[in-house]
Figure 1: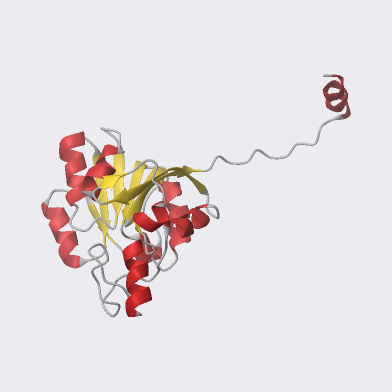
Figure 2: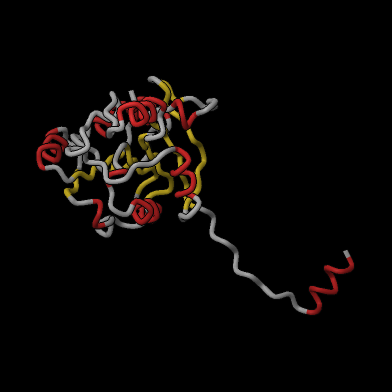
Length: 213
């Protein structure tokens, strides 16, 4: 269902890269149904082979090493779905994404969901839910974040949040009350921040004109 939500946000015919694409199911759909020019990045051997078998161009690499092998501004959209929390330095990767892509669609789990809070409060143990099915000792997640945490992270990067879409049940909700409590995950549409214009000292003539207006 998350794939459907992501596909709905991508313009047909776009150049799309999926970072941590698994077996490339999502980008194969974008290629076949949306006419997108797609590329997948995956580390796992089995998933990488399955992506190749789908005819998707693939790069096998560890995202923790960055995106140096990818040319600048070569994609319209980058997808990072349920992967950011597994990255050692997530802000570094997000900043690097905007060297290679104009926009990014990032899906993150919400560790502040009410079921997680309830399990921790009542059981005193690391939570296991339908959307976070791993026991603590086998989880690939190395960071635990909420919607509030992601907003704070974005304020430190070279990008800005265009849209925050909390995912409640199987729907992405544009406006949701108590989203940080109710959403099991969220989709963020991000774009590169506009560069600041360099400061220019006014000449005496410009100051005189400005004062007269």
